[in-house]
Length: 308
Image (tube, rainbow, N blue to C red; front, side, top):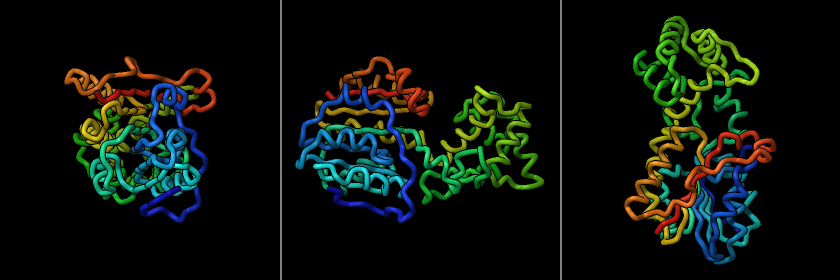
């Protein structure tokens, strides 16, 4: 049963979210019935439900998420599990603090799916999509102070170009930043469609079938910066060894090279230090069947390590 839930929204539940790479997760990870699972991105509870089914009444599932709507969906999804369930509105960067606050010791599994859900993309208040006009927000956690609009309208041209290059890996970052600064001198950018159109003009490219949208990399860069995604991932990876029992697992699902590179390097360093055994020599990716069923899975990469 659900034991605790912090700051869960009363908003209507979002559309269903399909978890990725469930088969390889179940293939590689085995848990005792009295195990403790810490899901750092519980979302709608898809992955947590898979592992929660392995647990009995003496097991415990701790789910973290920064989105209260996701926590509300997870509460419904996980309510019939036999194990104890604790849901907390917090970023996985603070997983060590949350475990301590809950009086919990080392865990059998730390899991993090670094993607975001279809419901979040479609949420018109979040500004994660440029398919329809949305406010330039991009915060997955609305308690954060800085929005994407703050960045594009306030950063200096060089700083903005560096951000787009570092987090978006767009070689045209300087040109994009110059166009943004020129535009905001006349009118501030306030919507996703305004920014997407401006990036298209800067690159002299329009959307084309079968190609990623020209603004995709800029949007990725702004979202990463707004949500401190890479810093939070680094904090999780750094704290994980001290939070895992011997034989415990850490499983991370990433969706772009900036994330995957950090996970790979962390696992390799911990292996060299005699802390981890790397179970996935190469990242596990979705097979063609899953990619057809769930397009979100196409860019997902799963890496798993075990605590020695």
